Image 1 (cartoon, rainbow, N blue to C red):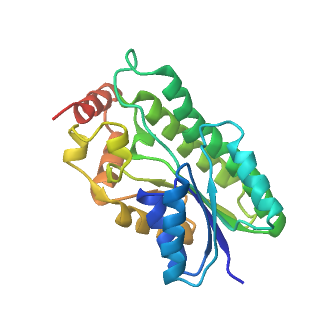
Image 2: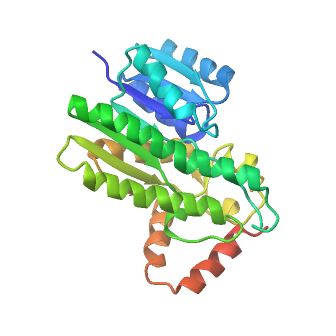
Image 3: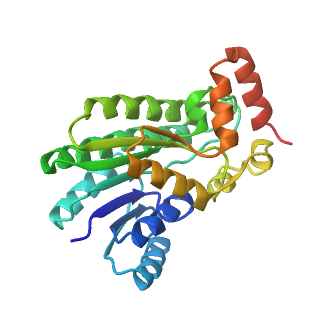
Amino acid sequence: MNKTALITGASSGIGLELAKLFAKENYNLVLVARNKDKLEQSARELTEKNNISITVIAKDLSVRTSPKEIFDELKEKSVPVDILVNNAGFQVYGLFSETDLERELNLIQVNLVSLVVLTKLFAAEMLKRGGGKILNVGSTGSFMPVPMNAIYCATKAFVLSFSEGVAKDLEGSGITVTTLCPGATKTEFAKRAQMEHIRLFNMMVMDSAKVAEIGYRGLMKGKKVVVAGLSNKLTVFSVRFTPRNLVVKLGKFLMSPK
């Protein structure tokens, strides 16, 4: 019997590329995103190429009740989740004094609160079955404060800290928790956040398929933290030895228009 992977933010980018990798390995899929049409199109393409079943759930994770509704729907359909991928996320770019509060609260709900709720609910089910895997998508921003990106990076810092703590809590249970930390990646993410013009997205950009492959391999090996790409690894490593004020200045430079 095929195992099942649930992927949030599965309609494009890293989430869709991860879905392709799981499908190749004969995992049944639960694809979650807001755009039902795109999810159904991806599901059709994946089932044409792979002998798997796919459940599509169109939910907006900025809505507080969505994580529990996803969990309840799968429970009702008797779909066990062996691997949970918390990939959904978005960004609000700009000076904190000028950005929209409502969008930022939605960002916190998606990047942080919904991730915690989904992890809590599905980890409990994995414990009952004696095993499972969780992949939470952080960022190179998990390791540093970044001006014009302050709330996003703060949520990703939470994701990393939370995931490492939960990984230790679950040690010996058969459940592993991995945090994937990509840097700038070629997806619709930057376009939606109106960030394509900044220096970061014109200097160090990785392909989403490559990021997904790195994350997938790390997840399967049970690694706790996976930083995607050599330049990103060097950046994260150097932050440890760089004065905090210089890190913030570098962040502002990278987030500013080229």
